[in-house]
Length: 159
Image (cartoon, rainbow, N blue to C red; front, side, top):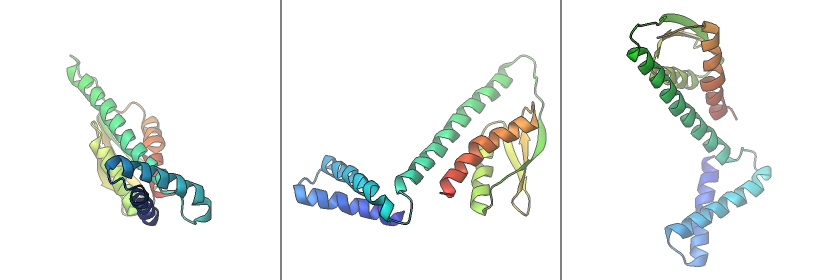
């Protein structure tokens, strides 16, 4: 991936040199042309196309922002209700992530989301103990984490 980014930058600079256009618009046109060239020759290179990884990272960031907004409004709703009707609890979450980096990112994303907190990670990095402000159904909450955060993290790290 770093080689593809460097190659794309070189194509953009060569484009600017050939056109004698040393402006930002000239660089952008050259960079987009470089993306096109790299996309065409991607079948001849062993590594995957680098923009796929960039899109996966952007998707993960967008997912985190969406979950932050949704859970923030849920917590605000709990605070503003006249009668506090929550069911806090701690549950065990078995993850399919394997590396330390993946588990750390998942744990941080859970901690950043209002209403949830990762209390502990087991020694084998397979179990997270999570405190939630309002637990309706543990299986539903686990499947939501698995289908959102965990799936997006796997897209970024395993391609």
